Image 1 (tube, rainbow, N blue to C red):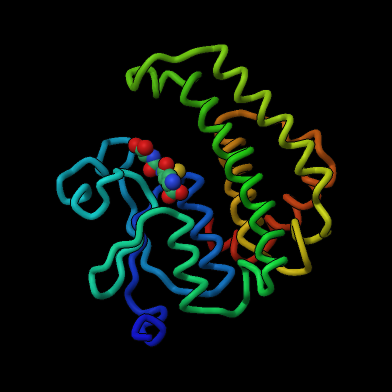
Image 2: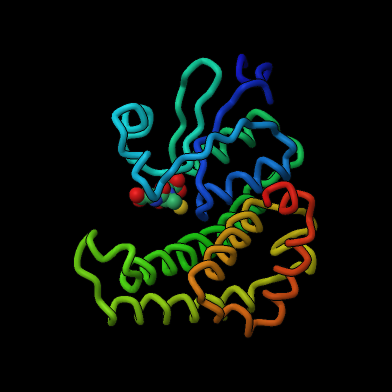
Length: 213
Ligand SMILES: N[C@@H](CCC(=O)N[C@@H](CS)C(=O)NCC(=O)O)C(=O)O
């Protein structure tokens, strides 16, 4: 496998301080995979230049450019590629049941929390006002879903240091970047959940987070 031999050489990740990119960076730091991070000026539409759209027609970050020019889009696809080229530490699950359990928490963090926050901010923030109609009701509905899913998360945390099992998994990376995002848009509902917050504080002290800052 050629890509295994190229591990940590000159992969580039196009990057902006936003949750999907941050999730991948924390994951790569946890696995100690070295990547060159290329900052993209998302606010000034650098993702919409022909050169960038040629690399990623979706016009989003993150995307990963391999040494041979292959481009991998979608944060989850990048994460699976990184797990494939460096299997240890395992962060996506070893047995079928572990994989399923990790995926359950990760999907809750991504679809139940991160995406609801994105719906909320798209419907409330002046920054998105020219992107289409906004609705206060839709914003409120998204925030209500966010709060409901926080309770489900709180009840499902089985670990102390990590969300699930006794090691970091992709779910920790997704949730940490989601809460960073929540703080950046002024959403504080997560603060009321004690197990969740205890995890957030502990995970925030990891080297992967220090490196990410
Ligand atoms: N499903 C994609 C979503 C990527 C995404 O929405 N990225 C946001 C930042 S977190 C972005 O680039 N937004 C810019 C835009 O939509 O114009 C993934 O997980 O990689």
